[in-house]
Each structure stands twice: as C-alpha cells, then as structure tokens.
Amino acid sequence: MGIIKKRPYYFSDSSIASDTVLAFVMGGISLVIEIAGIITSFATFGHVPDIFGTLCLCALILSIVGLVFAFLGKKAQEGGVKGKRMSVIVNVLSLVILLWLFLLGV
Image 1 (tube, one colour):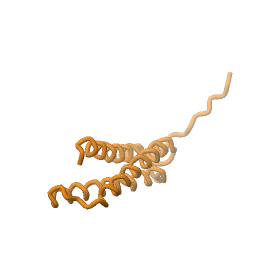
Image 2 (cartoon, one colour):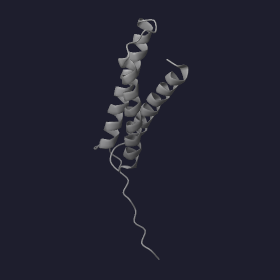
Image 3 (tube, helix red, strand yellow):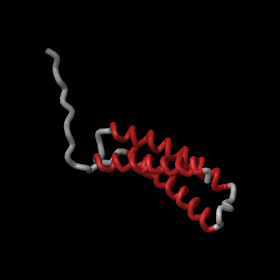
Image 4 (cartoon, one colour):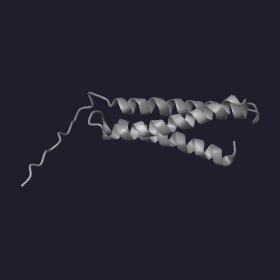
C-alpha cells in the first residue's frame, strides 16, 4: 500500500496569501474606476470625457488579472477562507458591472 501524505489544516489566519491581497487591490481599484465613471456619467448627463472609456478598459484588465490572482490565492495554504472568497467575489462583481455597462451601451 502507498503512504498517504496528509496536509496539515491551519486553524489560524496569522498569515495572508499575497495573491489574495493583490486580487483585493486590483478588484478595489477596478470598482473605484467604475463607480467614478458612473457618477461622472450621471453628473454630466452622459457627456463623459473619452478618458473614462480608457479607464474602463483598464478596469476590465485589472478585474480579469485580479480574478486570476484570486483563483491562485484560493489554492495557497496560508490565509483564511473568507478573504479568499471575498477576493473572488469583488473581482467577479467588478467584471459583471463592466459587462453590464458594455451591454447597456454606456
């Protein structure tokens, strides 16, 4: 019979996966850019400067890369489960908002 190697289960959240932190930061920046674009769109009655289109593309790239880092962070041993889940949720929410804005034609 083969030897089964058991991985230890960590009960403490003393360390945080660096991938999770990167995913949080990228998702947060992406959400801030999206919210700023939406508020500016309402404030100027739809006459938004062209830079916000470029910023939304940057937010899309940040959201996709943040989602990749979030999935890499979920596989890491260190860090808590809630932080890993929230990093995925933040990036998916950012991606959904951007796709929703794209489909609306804003």
